[in-house]
Length: 311
Ligand SMILES: Cc1cc2nc3c(=O)[nH]c(=O)nc-3n(C[C@H](O)[C@H](O)[C@H](O)COP(=O)(O)OP(=O)(O)OC[C@H]3O[C@@H](n4cnc5c(N)ncnc54)[C@H](O)[C@@H]3O)c2cc1C
Image 1 (cartoon, rainbow, N blue to C red):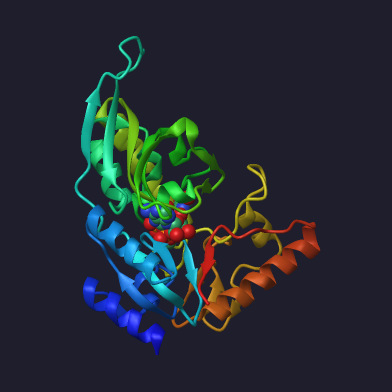
Image 2 (spheres, rainbow, N blue to C red):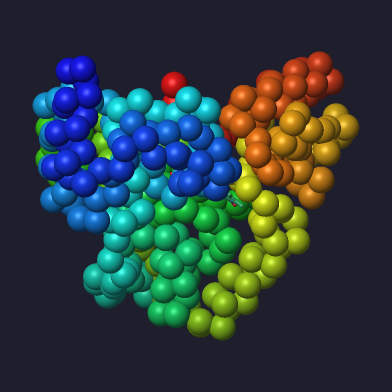
C-alpha cells in the first residue's frame, strides 16, 4: 500500500507510464513490465526524476535503445528510465584542436539519447572520419559508450573525447575526459553514473572515402547478420580476438538450434533471434545449451555480451 502510494505520487508528478511492457522497448521484443517508465527529454527532468526516486527509495534502471538487453519475463521492479528522448541534433564544437597536429581534428558533441546512426551520418556529412565503422550498429550514443560498441577492428572508445555524466548519488553533473575512463572490450566501467552526452574527436577527411567505408560496412553487416530479425546483436563475447564466438557455436553444430521461439540464427551463429513469441526464459535456456555444448567441445566458457536484467 505504501509502495503503491509513493509510486502513484511519482507517476503523477512526472507523467510516467505504469506497468509498461518492456518488450515494446527492446530490439529482442522480449521483457515483462516496468513498474514505472519515464522518458525524460532534458537533463533537468532527468535530475528531478532521479532525485525523487532517491528520496522515495525507488530502484532505478537505465536503458538507451534497448538493443543490447534481455529483460526478464517478470519485468523490472521500480523505475525504468529510457534515455532515447534525451537528444538534440549533434553539433560541432571546436576546430583545430592541436595546431601542430598533422591531421585536422574536429569535435562533435551529442546528447546520450541521440541515435548512434544519426551521429554517424552527421559525421559523414561533415567529412569527419572515425565513426564510419559503426554503420548499422543500432541504439543510442550513450548505450554505445557504455557498451564500448564496435566491430572486430574498431571500437567507439577510440574516438571519445569526453563524456558528460550525472552522478546518481550526488545528483551533480560532471565531464570526464577519455583518459580517465576505464574502457575495455564491450564495457565501460562506470558505477552509479548515467551518461547524458559526449564529445567525439574526429578527423577531417575526404567525404567520399568515409562514405565508401560506411556503405561497405553496412553492406557487410546486412549480408552476414540477421539484421531484420528481433535480436540483441551478438549474444556472446568473443573469447579472444582470434576466436570468434560465432565460429565456435557454428562448429559445435548449433546453427538453427531452437527452443520454442528462440533460435540460433542460421545466418550468424552468435545471434540468438526471437522468431515470433520467444520469452526471456526460452532465450536463457538456449543460451545455457549453447554454453554447455561449446564448453564440452572446446573447454571454453562463453560469456554473454547481451546484458540480462530484471526480476
Ligand atoms: C541487429 C543488431 C546489430 C548489432 N551490432 C552490433 C555491433 O556491430 N557492435 C556492437 O558493439 N554492438 C552491436 N549490437 C548491440 C547494441 O546495438 C550495442 O551494444 C548498442 O551500442 C547498445 O546501445 P543501446 O542504446 O541500445 O543500449 P541499451 O541496450 O539500452 O543498454 C546497454 C547497457 O548500457 C546501459 N546504458 C544505456 N544508455 C546509458 C546511459 N546513457 N548511461 C548509462 N548507462 C547506459 C544500460 O543500462 C545497459 O547496461 C547490435 C544489436 C543489434 C540488435
